[in-house]
Figure 1 (cartoon, rainbow, N blue to C red):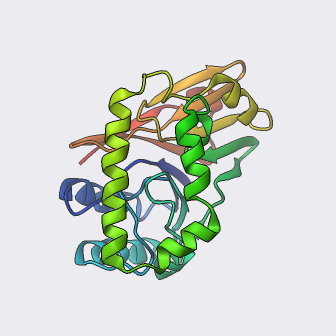
Figure 2 (spheres, helix red, strand yellow):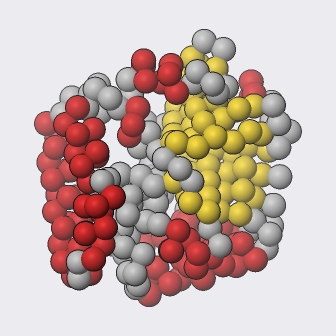
Figure 3 (cartoon, rainbow, N blue to C red):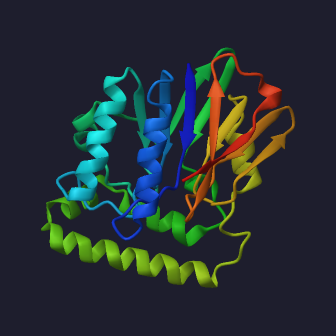
Length: 239
């Protein structure tokens, strides 16, 4: 069995090459008995499970084919697509993970998360995250007309881009104490969010940071069921 971990694709109609890359990935792994884990920011913005568009329909169709071949898809929300829910995933029998989830491959205990909760030094973001994820506020936003939700999403993206320009590199990275706590009951921590792909040794444990999808490639993680913990490596996916 193949376990495939990806994050930070930021798919949108404005970047068709990224969409093509994701569709090619599904085709590549369709016949490999694959468990696909998408750890947040699958889409550049998500305005609700009731949103439809031709480019999105193409993705859903490919996901149905992928699942029909005996594979499984698991999704964990990120800071860009936190409004994505089980209703959308039901279109292709996908599974919604908790914000922090755990799996095991063989004897290896693995913790999965998007990664934004590990960036505890970014106090302003953590406050915003707590507010915007409030179920009451989120329910209200989902009840608004799609066109208005689109304007709100565009505003969030613009504000996020402006904020990143003035924040320091270190503040937007993970906090090492938060990482140590996350690894307390796990051998391996896998996350995205920071766009800084790497494999970090944390004592006798590991933290693997998945890469964001760029114009031509991305850093992804492929694990076989008979994995050797010492030999874990990120893989470059070209598209």
